Image 1 (cartoon, rainbow, N blue to C red):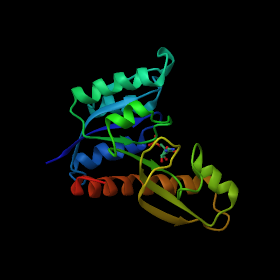
Image 2: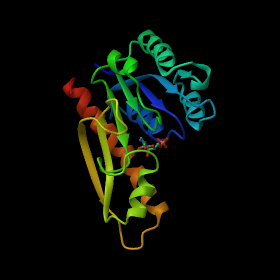
Image 3: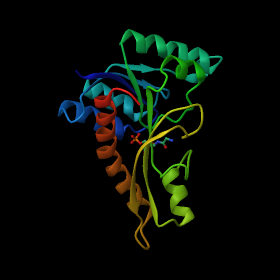
Image 4: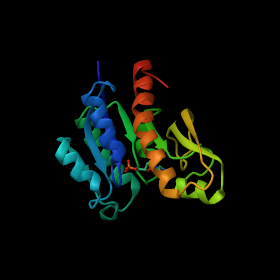
Length: 192
Ligand code: GAR
C-alpha cells in the first residue's frame, strides 16, 4: 500500500521534486496527492505543474487568521484523502487547527542538527557560528519553530575554509537522499 501524502512548500521546491522522483522510482512508497503552497510566486508551483501534481496555492494575506486558511487547507487534504503532511521548506508555523486535525502526522526537515540553529537560514547560522559539524534533522511537527520529537538526524563535517555555498550544496544533496529514506521508514512502520 502506498501512503497518500501532501507536501507543503514555500519556495524553490528541490526537496519536493526529489520526493516526487522517489515515488516514481518506488524508493518512497507514497502517492503525492497535493502540493500546498503559501507563496503564489514560488518556483515549486512550476515544478508541480511540470510533474503533474495537483496544487492548492493560497495567500495568507487574504485571510483574517491562520485558523481560517488552515480550515481551507484541511478541506483540501480531506478531499484528497491525505494521511500524512510532509513539510519541505514550508516557512510558516503550523497552528493548532491543523495540528489537531493531523496529530503526529506532520513531518518536517530542517537543515541543522536540532536543537541547534532553528528558524530561517539555518545553514548560514551554522556557518557564521564556526561549528565543525552540522547536518539535517527530520522531526515530528509541534506548535514550536523546528521543535518536536526528532525522528532521525544526519551529520556532516565542515571542512577548514569551506565556503557557505559548498556547505549549502552538500546539505541539500544530503536532504534529497535522507528525507525519502526517513519517510519510507516512517510510512513502513505506520506510526510515530
Ligand atoms: C531546505 O533546506 C529545508 O530543510 C529548509 O528549507 C529548504 C527548502 O529548500 N527548511 C527549513 O529551514 C525549515 N525550517 P527547497 O525549497 O529547495 O526544498
